[in-house]
Image (cartoon, rainbow, N blue to C red; front, side):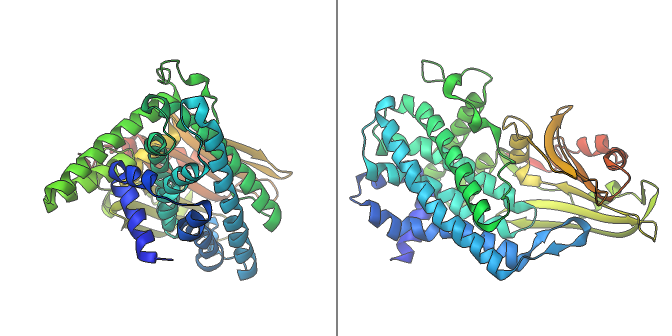
Length: 424
């Protein structure tokens, strides 16, 4: 195993996919060679991050803080996820191979495994951010989106399909991959005894290929058409990056990297999140009749991106307390818009004592969770596809938490949607 070679390939497929795919397609390889020399190494990243999140860092549980699960449980989860993800990758490759003739391509199991494995690279690498609170799932989503772009670009080189048919080929492959992911998740959950959160799925890939027109284009206004536009933006940024690399101009290269990050995040530019003093006004002195007892506002960065978060605790000094969090997703606002808009994120589950659901209302993404037994809940909204406002705690009912959120100056927050936005 050559770790430097693996790192070099991962870097190349992410930063220069247009020049790397022809090289990958021409390389002689085997199924076992791809697994032992690449897949088994990078596929371990999400499993390791999951273990660290569950047993070392802990899972956030409202104002109660971080809850850490036992090492045995976390390790069992990580191992099960790792093994089954390897199986899922192989099955996905078999499906890509089987679909090839339907889209004018040539069947070849090794090439199918190549395109699946190297497309997964951006997701595997981005999953490292899972250890970073708040930023983690958004960066992972960026990795998923970029993986879709890589798959679409790689299919013509590896499976020899006509470029004009790659969008349809990609769409069907993604649908199958999502189904496989759900199955893997269900199996992992049954092994370790806990759901993984995949029920909060991203809706565009649950749609059937019926939105694809006979000309190889997606119907106007469909999720596929928006995905295609996203891919076109990435392609433009990719060409800019390649030109900058050839020029040797360090400034141009830096700008090109910024443009690529902005395109991958769907923001089309750098976004500086709000400074702490801009968040403070949205953490009032009182909330739902309770006095503020604690406040913390901070701005953090990771991988060239920023996010600002303000947290406040309110209490009557006895049993009643609420927690308020206001977050500015900054450079990640494009992904928030993706989730709140054309991804169609939604989830609805019920238990004997309560419910947990995510839905759209009035053009905003809303999440609410309530447990009748503990009288504890959470209510949050995404404002202007950029800001997240959430109130959690004990209350008489969910309506009290809704009223608390609505008492925040949400229109004032929405008015700041373009602050700090720098177009490429």
